[in-house]
Image (tube, rainbow, N blue to C red; front, side):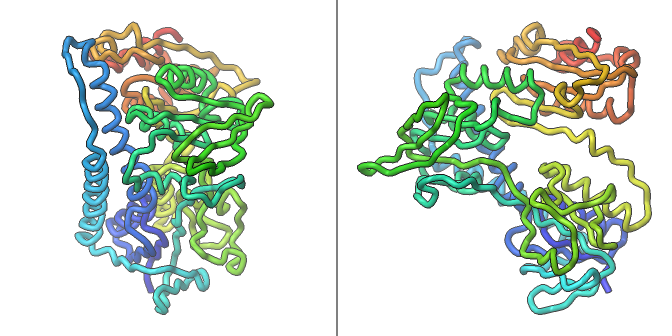
Length: 445
């Protein structure tokens, strides 16, 4: 009998399998598609590869600020695509190498849970003491006219583009929608971003998303908030996207429609009802150890619907393993940092100001435009916003600006250690660095 069977080899699945093996567990990892899951193959990594291509284009456009003249430049989209695919292939190879080195048993096939101690894959039954479901998520679609047209695509489809669109309508201004809008805007695509809610990036802090919208518009992205995407129609070999905005119907010529209206848990074909596992449309219900209502059966990552981020899935797995081996692991899932890779970057951790309404808290902002390093980089847009509770402890940090994806981890560490503002002010930050924006923000609290 195995100690553990993990269904799904995305970041949560393969990281957990590796750690389980390091703990001495006899583990089996099952994957029906490609090791690495959505994040590595169709999400985080290929998107970031395109993002950094776009970042170089953005830099080229501003070289005159540094006294460098470039008359023209061209983009070889085939090389862009090849680079993205090479990065993905390399990362998948790295994961497989680690799994092989640790002798993790990897089985390719579709798994079915027979009962809490039995998993069926490729007509073979595997007996196990514990099961972890790590089947991830899938694009969530909304109904609209023309849904089956070739011009309509998901976030997975867009990463397989062979030809860059000239005009694009993006439905949904969440993380995926905004990242794609920024990337393709820099590649020269005319981008129209449509959001049903009152503001783009709905879950983020109110000041951050307002500033982001203004900066995206300034960059040339067309944004429609409080707007409903009605569908797409074909006329005379051209496509028109239909949007209802401010009680008016708007038609936009387009040659690509990206539907990025969120993601839904992928239950992986597992018959949860038959097994008696409690779940909802939002995900499989789990306790603090990521265990379902069935002893020995766990659900980690996107499939439990708590927070759909690759690194969250990994730490879900670590938490589940700590329960399996009866070892305390103190992970604070209220302090999961998240990043939006747009221009500029956005990063957050902890509570937003909206979530703290009715409580005693205070905030402070510090702008990047006064930071010497930011001026040297010619990246002065944005700010750091800190939120402190009545105990003088940081409970939230929200950054829009250069290197936000790196800066957020300093604050995450401080929050984890429960350091007070008085103590935080005594931490020395080197000069001249971008990190001084964080220290200056703290000084104002």
